[in-house]
Image 1 (cartoon, rainbow, N blue to C red):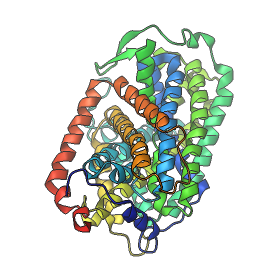
Image 2: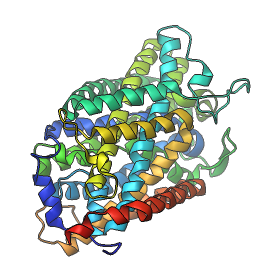
Image 3: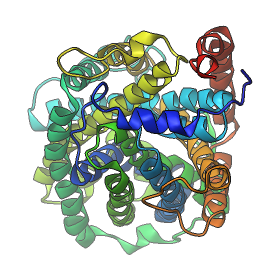
Length: 491
């Protein structure tokens, strides 16, 4: 069997139709939109917006959001076609297996670990930061000691205390992993309640914050091109063209999640119509909210505030300091953000377990990853292994490192999905498509270009991390997966 042998389409469609033996179909189109919004609105909006304004673009972070949204929309159209044509768990991994062969499928499956597992860890770290805000500013009790809510690679600003492990981040990962084992429909219900809460809070911030915008904070809207060196000594392109592109790559993390909808295809009641609605609907809702939110946040507080006082909890800090009389809103935001982060972690963990489930069904990972719980019909062993992986990242690695790894991994996945649409149109033109990406190959090519541009904006340190991650993946593939692939037995 060659490295580029493709998984036959008839096998994929048989698996999609074989719902009696596999995952339970419980999700509606509305649940998918909520799932997407639940994954999208979270750490990206409440943490990465301030980071992009401080390090890259100032008030023009809104333009960065628009560029990131365009890249996501182009990839989203491609996701919508593929998920409605091949309604099976696995997302970009499955689509790549059908179009580019096993080696590329492995690359994308391994790459998706950066998006889902490392993404969940990133949000878990932010959850820990906001938990301390809740304890101090809402409940008025002592915060969790610094050493037990930071990684060993972090030291307090005064240099007196070093981190040991991030216990709150580990706790939330464990709790949500156990909820996922209980069942997808139960998880979707919890997610739906959280989504309503956090969308309401975002709208409240936009409406109330609009009156506190200071026009001088928006001038110049696109700062002159300079270099900003952050507290860790890392240089960032600030202002000008590359500052905006860098901001797009940074806030791109805020859009991660809409593609996680496609990993739940095998658990959706009517995937051929529901998947496009879930993917594009969640993306549209969030894009509008993001642009308005970024405009308000950068108008309320100056860039220097986000560089010095803001930190991980910049939104709450900005409301407390600049929106006089709205201290109650800062407290409400803290509670809503904690709940919102929880739903993001939930969907990321769901996406990762379903990718591992699909890879295991193909023999590229050990069989235990596709073992279903006898009662709950969820891939519980995969969830438990992912719990350990994500828990270790969340407990011991700093948030900014894992955040950028997530962005570059996801952008790479999006590029391959766009290419997959072009290939599948050529190799299988008669495949039934409930949703068709318009203007192929133009839209997919533009998607590749937009995502590639954002990768360039993330800088060489992140490229090195991606190459190192992929090198580790190749060792596993040639050491285990290639020998155990089920494709060689189906020929």
